[in-house]
Image 1 (cartoon, rainbow, N blue to C red):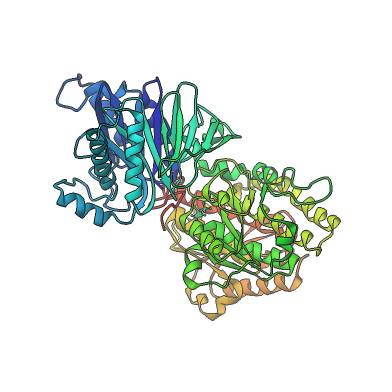
Image 2 (cartoon, helix red, strand yellow):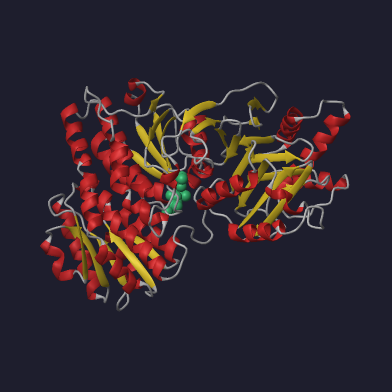
Length: 637
Ligand code: M6R
């Protein structure tokens, strides 16, 4: 959701900012814009639609001489201070007018914003009473006018002009805003400086040599620097070519946390694949291996990444809630089976967006596990904060180093999956599953329910997964062919039992978000209580079958369910363990997956469903990596 980039340095900033925006495209957006400070002028350009529209507008103006009617003419390509934005519309439609940056009434200040300013109506009314004319429908424009007003007031009060004035004015503005925001701003009269502010919305600093960056996430500047600074909440940051200064909203000096980014720009490129999603599906064996790397210590214990909890805290846990959204919620559903089985602690899985509104019973002995790839999902963050207010302990599973969710948690297990660019989660899901298994084992061990050798045996099974995944992916072509056959199906249903149920939900989610098709996942046993009425002659139904070697009753029950739907005309697509002959008579299409213990089976059964959705979407001509209406990181509630 909304991508933000800022640059202060010695090089022409426009290209750097546009490249950064391109790397943030995956977050999802519907308009884009830039503001450049050059020669005492503020030059802006913004367009609805994809970045290409903005680039076209910029290239048209680059043929115009400076001094012409067009603001700034070619000068926009020369300035060395700039901000850029990709907008995911909240207040006001995705139009040129509502695109960011927003200029203040003085024409000298430009602001970009991610988040929602909740008191914007009140602020707007106040500014309008003062005679300010608004030109957009956005909440952001308030911040631009307020900032210009503060700068004017400070200048009139005789405050020295320069970068510090910009930071001081931003602090004043932040104190008036309610809601969640990341703001970046420049002033035509203060060349060489970009000011940023954050509250409950992502912003990270890139530390360069003779240049510095601000961005929603590190991928925006990864090709220039891998040294970054994590900001805290309610901080204002001022960057110039040579300096980074951080304060809180009251102006007290504050510090960020330096970190080095462990991957390089090539990790965020397509690397020869048609889509990021295909690349990320292919990366899953390595991502799973990386999540597992170094997890078993020499003394046979499971190692998390950051632990601010004692073993006694974990022994005191008498109830677990897992909170997450979308795909991460499905990984939590799988985790419930493993955690309850291994630890015997009651475990509930909740949609993060619902959690705090139903007043859950939480106390010191409750462990809340927050799962989030981005670590910035607002619904999950708010659920986490609610849990902390009720004194519960919070453990985060996250893929993004230093994001807000892990930072506010008592313990963290990073998934080490590398950047996930496609909006549809793939490797995030598999690595979240691995992380959940590890946490279940850790809890069981700390509480004395599992011995080191039992834990090591499960870890050894997990360590076999990368190879199994490689084998599965090597034989995935028939799934692609099947996808092309299914491209015009009016609906696709998915059924599973036990851990196969969340896999069915995940398969349906992938198809909905990518192919825009009606798709539903069901617990196979529930079909007869209603959904079986959806089955018509030829309705494709994907059936996730557990291993016959595991819980026999589970396997037999789903085979019966397959027979029931087949008798009603369903076209059955059966995902079953290699060598499971019992399903052959009932499968119109059989997709074999490597033999895997029941609890770990989602690591393999999900993969064909990812490929199926990706290929159907591509065959229907959709943008696989950036499906309509969706954002990668959902930073509003
Ligand atoms: O970053 P998060 O894991 O918190 O994101 C949660 C969901 O928005 C996300 O999993 C979403 O459902 C996926 N893009 C679906 O593929």
